[in-house]
Length: 517
Ligand SMILES: Nc1ncnc2c1ncn2[C@@H]1O[C@H](COP(=O)(O)OP(=O)(O)OP(=O)(O)O)[C@@H](O)[C@H]1O
Image 1 (cartoon, rainbow, N blue to C red):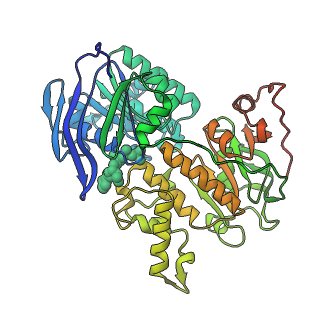
Image 2: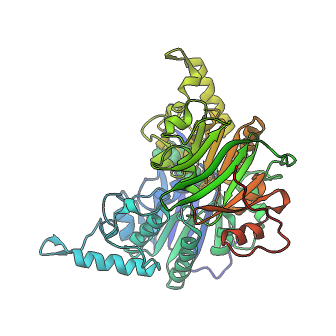
Image 3: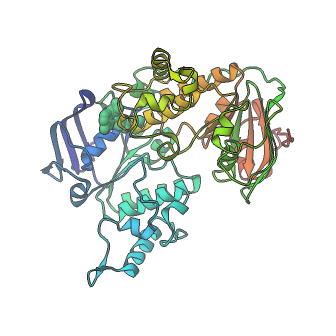
C-alpha cells in the first residue's frame, strides 16, 4: 500500500528472526525505512517492536536474516557500530547516568579532548548547541541528571542521540515521559529533522501522536510484520484491529450512577514545600476520582505524599476516618490504611529488575500468601498465575527475570503487584504509559472491578480521554491546588482543558468548586 514516490530504503531487514530462550520475539520479518520520513511501528506489548529496533541499533543480534544499510549488509555487535552507519536510538528506558552532569552524559562516548584531558568548555558548548537544537535552552549543561524531571531527562537523551548525527533516528516511546510542553517541542524537532533529510522510526502507543506525526505506519503482531501502509490509508479502528487481531468494542467499562459517597480517603489542606499549597480532596469507597491538570501541578507530589514518600508534609489525611499522614510507604501500606501506589517510573520505583517475575509480583503481598512465617508455595503459585492471567502478561516462565519482559509487560507487573495487595485506597500515577490499547482496556476494567469491591481509587493521568472515560469525578490541579472538580457528564475535554489552564471555563460546562473533605 506504499505509494510509488518512496525514495530507496535507507535500512532494510530481510527474513529476520530472533528468539529469546526459545520464545519468539521476531519471525521472518521483512521491513524497510527511508530517509526524510517518519515511520511509525505499532503493535501490542510484546509484539516485537523493541527487538526490531534493537537489532537495527546493534543492541541485540538477529538469529537469522540480514540487515542492509544504504545497500551494505551489516551485523552490528554494539550500538557504536550502528551509530557509525548512521543509526541511533533513543530508548524507552533512560540510559543517562544520574550522578553525572547533562554535558558529561551528552558526550559520554566521545568527550572532546585537549592535551589528552576532557575539554570541559568544549563539552559544555557542545551540550549547549545540542540543547538549543531541541529548543531546551533552559536546561543547564552543568546540572546533574538526577536533579532533572523525567521529561527533561528524556529531552537530554534526545539531545545526546542527535550529537551522533543520525541518518536514522529511532525513538522508542520517547515521548511517553514528556510533559505536554516538551511533547510539542519534540514534534517540532522531528519535523525539522525530517526536512533536513533524517529518517525516523517512531514507536508509540499514542494513536493521535502517530497519526499527527508519521508518514508511514507498520503494524507488528506476535513477532510478525503484519502490514505497512501510508498515513490515512487505514482508519484508527482498522489499525487497532491489525494490532490486536480483533475489534475493540467498548473501550471504557460503564460507570455506575453518580452517588454521593461518604469520604473514605479524606485529605484536608495538604501542604508540602511550595508544590502542594493546600490540597483538599475526598474519595469515597467504590469511587474513581481522577486528577487532572497540566503535568507538574502537584499531582505526583500529592500521590507521593499520600503514600508516605515525602518528608515534612502538613495537613490531614484519614482513611475510613482514622490515621494520619503516612510517615513511610510501609506505614501507608500497613496498619489500617492499606494504601497502594502504582508508580510512574517502573525501573527505579516499581521493579527489582534482576529478580524473577514471580517474586516481583509477590513482593508487596507476601503476607497474603503466607501461613505464619512461611510462604505457602501453592497459594503463591496461584496468586502469580491469577495476576499473569488477569493482566495478560506476556512471558516465557514466571521464574524468568522481570528484566526479560518487554517494557509494557514490565508495567503490567507493577500494576499487578499492587493489585495483589488488595488495597483500600489505590493511587495510580499515570499507569498506562507505554501500555498497548488492548491492555489499557483491561486495566480500565480492572480499576472499575476494584472500585466495585469498595476500593477508593485516585487516578492521575495525562490522557484526557482516560479521565473522561474512567472517572466518576475529576479534580483538576493548578499550582499545587485543586481548582475545580467535575463529575458525571460535566467531565468533558473542553472543561478539563480550560480548568487545566486555569482559564474561565465555558458557561455550558457546569462545575463546582472543590469542597474540603
Ligand atoms: N532479553 C530478553 N530476554 C527474554 N525475552 C525477551 C527479551 N527481550 C524481549 N523478550 C521477549 O520478546 C518479546 C518481544 O519483546 P519486545 O520488547 O520486542 O516487544 P515490544 O513490542 O517492544 O513491547 P512493548 O510495547 O511492551 O515495549 C516479548 O515476549 C519479550 O518478553
